[in-house]
Image 1 (tube, rainbow, N blue to C red):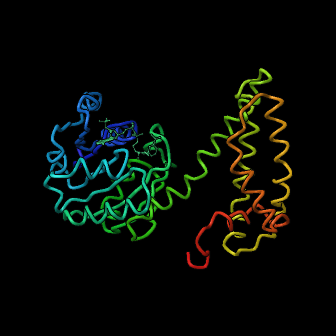
Image 2: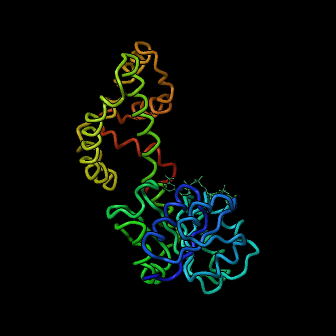
Image 3: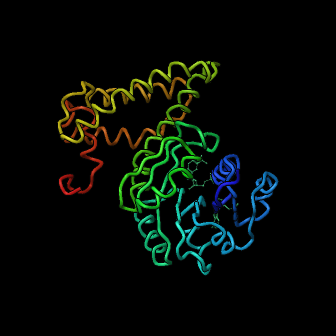
Length: 293
Ligand SMILES: NC(=O)c1ccc[n+]([C@@H]2O[C@H](COP(=O)([O-])OP(=O)(O)OC[C@H]3O[C@@H](n4cnc5c(N)ncnc54)[C@H](OP(=O)(O)O)[C@@H]3O)[C@@H](O)[C@H]2O)c1
């Protein structure tokens, strides 16, 4: 049975996966992309591609946008009429301020706005455990829960503020690049001995599980500003700085990306925080008074 119509703006890697999931679930799937030729594969699979974004907007009551940025989305929509009475849901990355500004723009055009984030890769779109979270108009979330559920089975409404998804996206996403760089560094260290990265995977998985198990403890220390519970001190990490330097020299791996972290540890020790848990570093990261946050 053909279901209702849904519009997807942007058919890049993620937008194509979103549109593909809607096609698979039997939705009449309307698509628009700046580079029209990038819609061909989805059209072959049954989607309707629009050259004019205004036609894509008016084709469905709900529009799911997945361009690179909020600015790109607003620039693409500028001048296009037809947003009035539509439900506009974004799934792109961006900062909270950009999300709030975009929400004002969408509301000003007469659309209801829900800001979302998908916390997985395109290949995971549609999986039961794929997480998407949203902030903004609760009624938009409730109205389209079944439609959004096509994209992932783990949906969460964070609250009525339209920037909450962007805020959590930025906060949760902060671990990604350092974690990936750490993995790449480890692979380079092993490669210096002729060992494959794959030999590290089981050990890295255990390591990440250990970190996962500690997150509630870390969060508790941070929320209570009580840096005494973890048992892994700033000084412990500071003492390992020289090991990093030796490892770089031994293996020929460029570890210069550690320099700002080393500098942060040195400042914390100079600040008298050597005996505190590593979580105390948050006091140096937080430039505003934490009590006012
Ligand atoms: N890929 C992932 O693993 C992943 C995971 C979670 C979230 N996301 C988020 O999803 C969003 C899209 O990512 P993606 O991986 O799909 O990126 P992508 O493959 O590079 O596609 C980018 C999309 O944005 C469009 N675009 C870029 N600049 C534009 C502009 N100035 N005006 C109009 N359209 C513009 C592109 O259109 P053209 O085809 O015309 O260039 C294309 O449709 C990003 O915010 C990303 O952070 C991605």
